[in-house]
Length: 260
Image 1 (cartoon, rainbow, N blue to C red):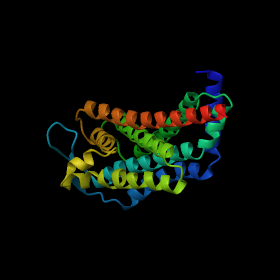
Image 2: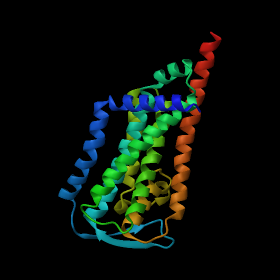
Image 3: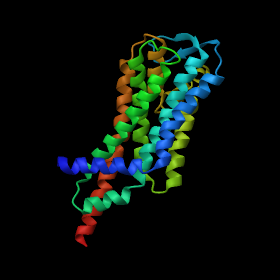
Image 4: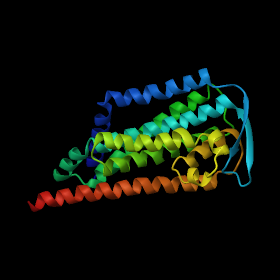
């Protein structure tokens, strides 16, 4: 990898993202809005819910507002991470192809895009995590942030994969929002999961392990190692698939142009 090409590509991806004012508005406004809505509307009553990643069935008692705060934060991270990744990959496919023809290596472009996605997700996680500290103190704060980071990276990889596969903006947006809404925004709610009948379906969804990791870290001392390993596997699957597809498409286009 040529570092001067990589740094130039990294700067270009940052500039392309910053030019989209709506993306920046979503990243700044939606987490703050959702967190304050939860605090204004959620009940302060004590509730019981199941932490499924524990080795034995474990029921936790916590304030409903605090549980809702973690759940809504995870849903917000899933939405925004997948949307930003989709936007970054999908809208600049043609730009990247032209850069490959001009001499850039596809690996340099893909790694720089991953760097931008990772940077945005980390900023989002830190902002949400430290905002939660104003309302309650999680049992294991940094482990909770780790679960949020995995959630952002898993859905960031999913958005990137969707952007590599789908060319249409509307189709791609629907693809990422529908899964994020059903998975992170609904089924991973600890209260819904505790009463669900076919829990195996929920457990196979991408946001299950990150959500359980954050909830478990925020309210309990349950072991987290298995969940971390599975989160890492989901992340590698989505990012790996996206990188392979993107690399193949850019290389094929370059060879086609050279032959002409």
